Length: 306
Image (cartoon, rainbow, N blue to C red; front, side, top):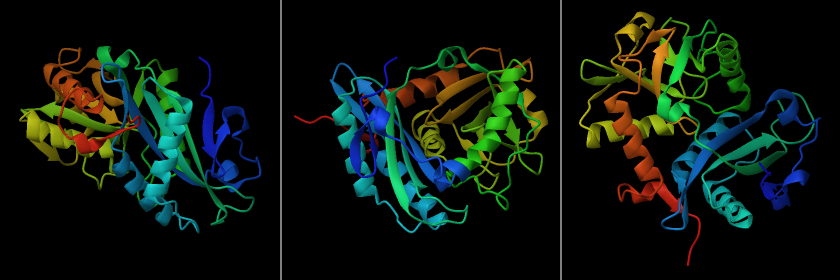
């Protein structure tokens, strides 16, 4: 697949191959950056590209930048304008994954607070088979980092090394991905996505004090389950032993959307295939994100006008 034509860096729309960061930069050397992964969905019938929950993502980006004490804080209006400018420059007509990253771009030590730059990239994103067939999951031996060490609710680049270890191990052991436990031995989340299970007529998910990301997609899923699918949602600790009792389970996140979990530690979840509740949720989520549903128009930012 050919790369996109342009990226955004140093305040400008830049040819893709010229969007480079110096190897001496603090962002490169120490992962001193924060980011938002954002999706844009192409609707061929409407000839429109919709950025999904752009305002929500950029609001969280402010929080992450402030937490990292960056000297320069890129404001939502500015980031949104440059992001939309980049998408139009590339003339995208397909579903995308977008990364908006604020990072320390100059040389220095890990405690450096400036200079800070903004990078935005967008690339076509094909939906993997696991969205329809479901994924197999390994309960990881790698523990989720606790909030007192590296808070997971901050989307810092360096945080994702914790999940990477779990992902690489799961793939090496023949699974699709991993599920991580926190320091109390309770279920936390996957490496970059939140966990839900259906049990006894309820959807159950770890609370935000379980060393998880305060996920925008998680909040969206809770709203859809309760307001449109009639499923009560309980936020509480989940024991590892409970996973075997799940009728259905799924991951959710910007990159993972709503992905059924059909197997955990080689044991089937429910019937071992995507269940009716996850399937209904997935369909509703994508209908809204792709603009086939009129629900929540405020969640969709159209890219093309006229």
